[in-house]
Image (cartoon, rainbow, N blue to C red; front, side, top):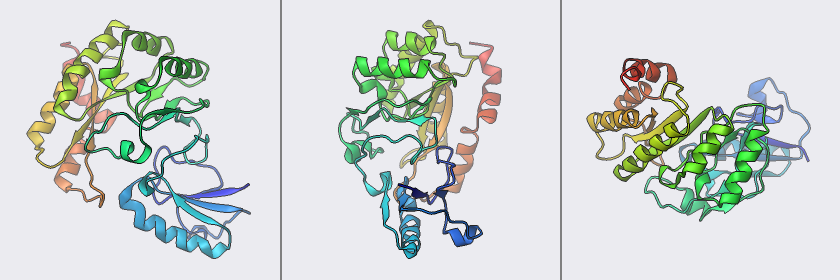
Length: 279
């Protein structure tokens, strides 16, 4: 079955094959291959209206049109490589056992559940380290077979990290491992995780250890946010500011400018260049 996938927004993770679209074909020169179904995939709630408009437009083809994705509260089924994510991106589990106030994953996907493991190098699991040891080891084994060095952009939970995880992450040649510092109680586990990763052979200078830091939520200030970002640096991580958005996706431009200085690798590493030599 040939499935056209339509996305209201293009990201680094979006597929790039000939059956991937971001608009109505007439606005792209009229190109339209033979297709059996159309799947409109929406990740962000603030793109939902555009996704619904696209679904309506694509119905004119006379083939079945389905709309889904995280923004539509999809529970998430088996992972199909290359269908809704670019080849190389992989999910080996769904759900999360935490209940963070800013995250919709537990409400949408429920508790952690393990999936069959497909080949890939960029792991997007919401909380891989909540899986069983056997599953985690199998994921590491899969990653060790890939030509590309592993990326863990879905994030690794610091409080779940164990020394053997760190050893294996080093053995498989991890290129980037992202942790998170979103709430005050994340900090001490982050410090411990940084220490374990450094003891396993990772270095601050290698910029392998990265940390997402949530900023711009109600009650946050630039001073508080910068303090958290610098605390992540002190713990051994390259910080990446993640700007909070509500369901409407409204952005404060002052926060957007602040985030820009803390989410682009070249700018962040430049900021930290004067600090790494002191570590």
